[in-house]
Image (cartoon, rainbow, N blue to C red; front, top):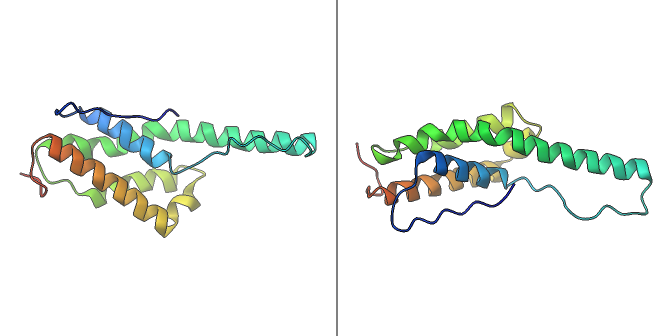
Length: 138
């Protein structure tokens, strides 16, 4: 997964771009080690480690569109009404805890809190770029 950067140039982005970027930030909470595997380990152990790493990378790629879909409607509503960041985070966490091998990680209180913070921040930036007050607008 490549880092995603949005340059605003003073204007809003489409909700799909926000959903993509927010999903990437959530998935970035999962780090797959890129540290070289110790060549002194037996070949079967090295193979197992690489297999697990590749499975984790593939799982992140599989989850990305699911997260984007779960978050998209919240970003779509950012331009015209108050967004419940808690609801958006809950939807994202539901994806991560119900359909992934990372469920235990995303059930940890500190990770739940981080996901809520990420989504709240992105939704707030989205509202600001649409010229809405901090509270949002009906």
